[in-house]
Structures are given as C-alpha cells and as structure tokens.
Length: 149
Image (cartoon, rainbow, N blue to C red; front, side):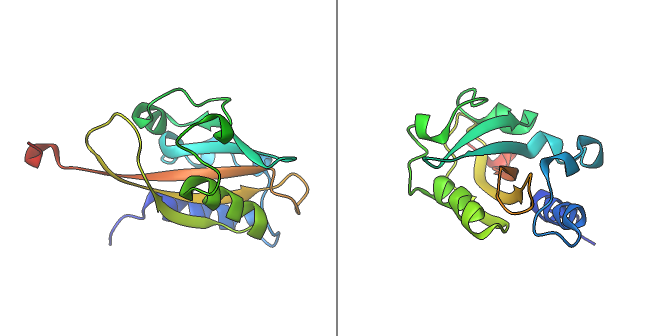
C-alpha cells in the first residue's frame, strides 16, 4: 500500500481536528500530532482591510528551498506573490470558501533539484466562522540527482 502524501495526511488530520465544526482552530493544531508534517508546514496569518497574508512559520524543509527568509513578511511585500497570482488566489479562495484548497504552484527558489511544488491549504478559525490562519502543507517533487546533468 503506497504511503499517503503529506497533503493527504494533512487533510485527514484537518478533518479529525475539525470534527463537526466548519473549521478547527489554531489551538487544535498540535505539533506533537504531526511530526512528519512539520518540515513541510507553513502557517499563514490572514490580514484584513485590505486582505493580505503574513508568513508566521515555515518548516525546515520549506525554509531550505525558498529564496529568502519569509517569516513575518506579507505576501504584498514579495514581488513574486502578486495579487491575482496562483499563490495569492489559492489563499484568498480558502478565506472566501472556508474550505481546503489543493494545487500546484510555481517554484521560485534556489534549489535546482526541486521539480514541482504543490500545497494543501487548510483554514483555521478562532471563532468557527472566520478564517484567521491557514495551515499550508507543501509537497516537494525533486529531480533525481543521479540523472540530472
């Protein structure tokens, strides 16, 4: 039986945390419960008026492949994360629908062996109604080092 992907594992965990609620809270997300997902976890704070997103935490594997230190930075400050672009639009869709989103995004970074990058975005809410934070889990597809010239 094939191993679940990080995004599949995160989705199953999000559903368990959620139980009968529309969305779980940030307090429900305990790192002890997701040790295998921590390296590919990102926590993004949702800002409003105007809508923006701020990186709060980047797992070690994500931090290693991105081109800069994004902790504390807003999407609007980062040239390659334009309003209306895929990364912004996926996060905005989570806020509007209050439901998870899964998609493939363009990789912009320095790791020459990253082939693909997908993410699962899972809404978290302090009040059960409004998305206050997004738990993102990355899935990194790598080129085989042995076959890369």
